[in-house]
Image (tube, rainbow, N blue to C red):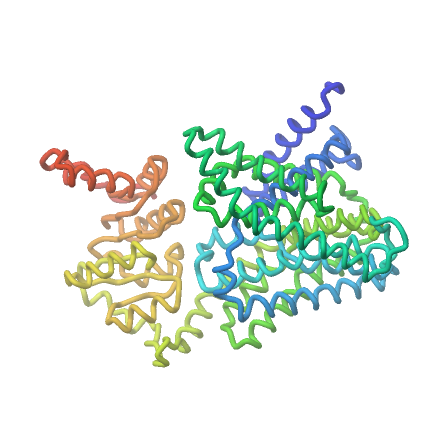
Length: 579
């Protein structure tokens, strides 16, 4: 092993191990983050084999924090938060308070100081946005009612943790840690100075940054250089993070977060997010790898009861508290259980808080290891909780379907199978998805008159469809029971209007097993997605970009006669294709 290139060695071994363990975690249907953390454990000083340079790992971790927080700010949406503010804001505040108190209770029995207990409790109270989004995306729930509440809830948690990162250094001295400020300033004065610095930085970002940053990016775009635009995005993130720390004494994390928030208001925010994503993801992986390398596995043997208590707070304590809060707001059980499962893990902010606690001398290495152990265990257990919700989903759909009420106060139609007498209408069309494309298809088919059955995973959508006189099934079409209710063998065609190609391919595969001769159409965004869909049994794939090009050709009169009609036609698939 070359010892004269520690940076190269740490990067190379770190990425290779993270890839290997992340792939293994994915195969085991676990979040990849669990694999990245375990890769760090394997490369840490407490396990045999290669040992990553601790100082370089810390530096890489800092870069990972900056880019993680930049990404959080870049995807921060005031609109999404306001849409669920009535439950997300008070719910998150109460849940964090309850979880923090439970964590402080555990720390009290362990004999820790008040400051250690506060950092420990806060670390247990905040869930990982990365883990949550991955779980919601796998179930196509990001845009659902439950998904929007869960994401809004975590946005509030993230904002509160950003505030904690600002306030805790000023409180370090009174809490028994190492105060960053010099002198004998009072607590009130310290908090006042901190608030003044943060306020000055935020004012500068909102007044100058929100104008200067979009202006700068617009000028870079005019150069036509994609790599220069990507470089500008990363320079903004890193430059503001460093400048905020150097000029205002604000943490890298807060500076990067506000850089992302300001950039999010630009018309170029989507391009900035897309172009910086590979580097942000790479350093996020190195961040989790670096965190894992600090973990001493011996704590699993030395303090098993402390670990069990900590995991219990994360997986059961704060989740039950969150579920009770949601039910107190008279929300459905499905929403309560989804929020509970979403919060039953800890992640990136927990690690950032734990690292801050170490630097402020509020936490010792043992407490830090306890947080890491609980994080790894909770991330591994989290998919099991979501799987349990999936098993309960049919029962909850039947239970909640009878309680749906539309905006006018009229009771929604029952969602029982008796209403779905699709067998009586031979040659019906089955549509999966009721988003923008699905709504347009419904409007056209409603005018033209072919019998139509819609599968949607939102109760409100099913209610609206049934009130229009259309047949609709509430459920996720990837489940065979849901597809079976659509009577696919008697259907004329299956239309997959959902945007996710991987989910559409899974639906097509299952539909092909139920009805080998069924004609299946789907939408796609790129050529690789088209091939994936075709390999899983889809007969016809429509790509939006190609249809736009054909529309332009038709407008200009440049399309050859019959060209657009002839192109999509393909030979019929044999029975069982793609299964």
